[in-house]
Image (tube, rainbow, N blue to C red; front, side, top):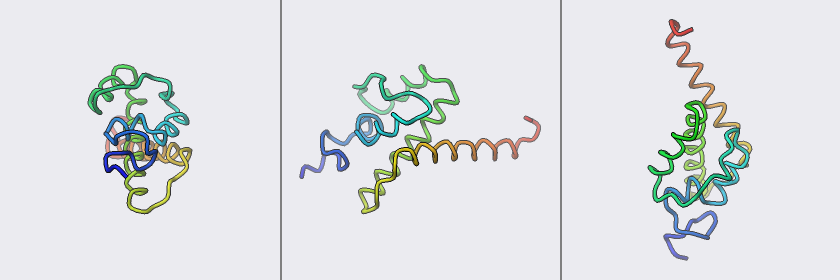
Length: 115
């Protein structure tokens, strides 16, 4: 097997954009996301271009959720590559939401003057 081909979908070269956006596994996550992203354009040259486009299109809270989801997708890919099992995309989306809420609550507790 070609080492450059995505180990999860075996369809395209494994680039950052493919792993986080174009891969069928990532698309399953985006399809179930609270932030509707799966029907947006594809073909970004790199992750930076993807992030810049989404920063323009999304509200700050939505972009934060996108970043947490991206981190979980990347982590999931690493888990599978190293012999772990694929988690359900619904679980990944719920976990992203939970992580973001936990983070925001901890920030609120650290900054009581903001309340």
